[in-house]
Figure 1 (cartoon, rainbow, N blue to C red):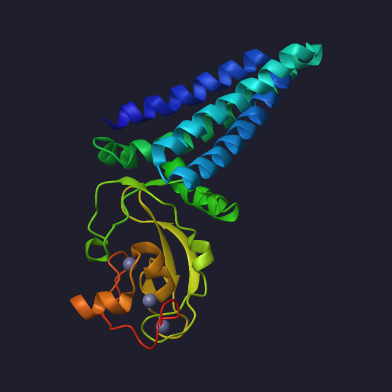
Figure 2: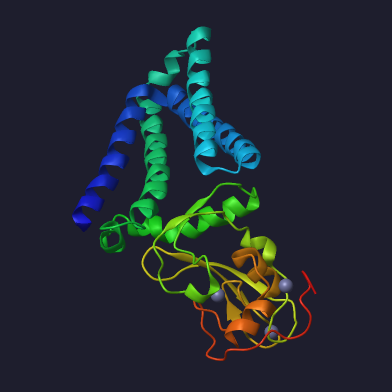
Length: 269
Ligand SMILES: [Zn+2]
Ligand SMILES: [Zn+2]
Ligand SMILES: [Zn+2]
């Protein structure tokens, strides 16, 4: 099955390179620009509708409509202005257009490779495909970009919904994205120090996890071993959860020493 993934990546790269070389540099540039505009409009519309209605489908519908308006609006504008400069079709411009097409194909692959890799047969095939590997390695970059613009968009993720299931390889579902970069400096549940956000790292298969380390006691976690992170991820206070299930450790980056939360929770005391 991994050859099917290789084939899909080749197809995406080949088709977009060919299409943009044919369209030439001028239109290739505008294709990239209108995709960026379409995505920006789409994300803004999603955020608005999702906040108003609280539903993912409503947000996705808004995303689709706004993105299409952006993508085809720019095209209609170019058409209306009758812009089609001759330099855009020079051989060198076609070559550069093809390079932009290749870049576009890479962006498309960077999105669809991790999505296929999270479900069904893709979970085995994607990590073994040699053409998919660079896109998996690049996946953490998308997380940093999303954090930097504080993107309000759900993620297809295998993150556990209850702490008790953490690290058990749950089925991937849509979950609210958490801005882990902003949890830098959260309070360690073992010693009460401010933890350091190390970044996003690929773990098993296609999954990417955030990692935090406490500079004082060395405790590592995906954020769940901090008061603020636990609240954000599981919507409960770690102090309350530990009262029910006893000492806890991170299921993603285990420390081998379960602890009871130390001191007072800075979120809800
Ligand atoms: Zn600590
Ligand atoms: Zn709390
Ligand atoms: Zn954890």
